[in-house]
Length: 315
Image 1 (cartoon, rainbow, N blue to C red):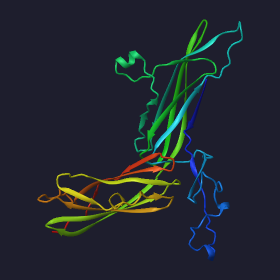
Image 2: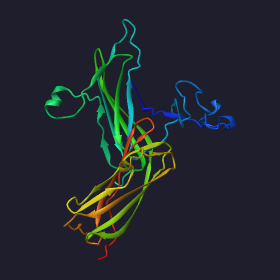
Image 3: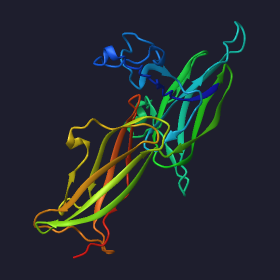
Image 4: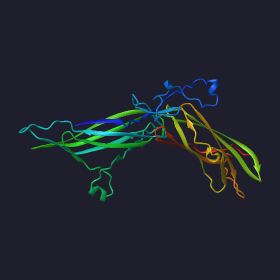
């Protein structure tokens, strides 16, 4: 028996660098065209415009890094690679193969999370009892058991994926249970840095107002498109806000190259006839920013900040 692990490949689009040729005086009104040698495919029906990304894909040459806010995915394969016994020789069968996975996170407590495998294999007896213990399967020679494991990454640092395989090795006269375990380590990095700043505005119709600004910096190595940046209020009865970002202005969703920065802003205000809740330290708690994005191949990522609020309010 042999167990292997491979993170699901995440290809990326090949970047190209279009070069605009000089415009001749006789064709001053003609739109500029990119030089064919600067396009990844050259002029063709599949790539007619000098867009930053070409239709070509490439796979990573190494494992790379995972990022906070993304979902880590990998395949787990258990292979029965022992050849069948010759006629008349001893017969050995592999039965009741079980595959389990755990993820150890880098938190202070070193928490270990039991992971669900897809597709789930639960026998009827366990299902009736409400248990999720996987049922074992029998593997013939040359066959493979494959599962997919997913885990939402929420903190930076070293993560350890622990995989345990158990099976029953049966012969014509006896049998024994075997178990082996493998560990796989990878590093999780920050994908999006969020910097916030709040300030007090002059009251409007007797209602207090604040401005909440946030700077979003793509510190990963991948391109991302922001899908949403929303403010989830902590005190829904006393506060309201206005969104001053692309969702209300009709602008397309921002695309952040590695190192790019996007500014967002919200106007937070008290509702008419109500007063925002004051904390003990004199700060008004607004809530949290909820941010969502997509990678260049459509993979989703999300991030939620801690509680945001104002400075001590002047009366």
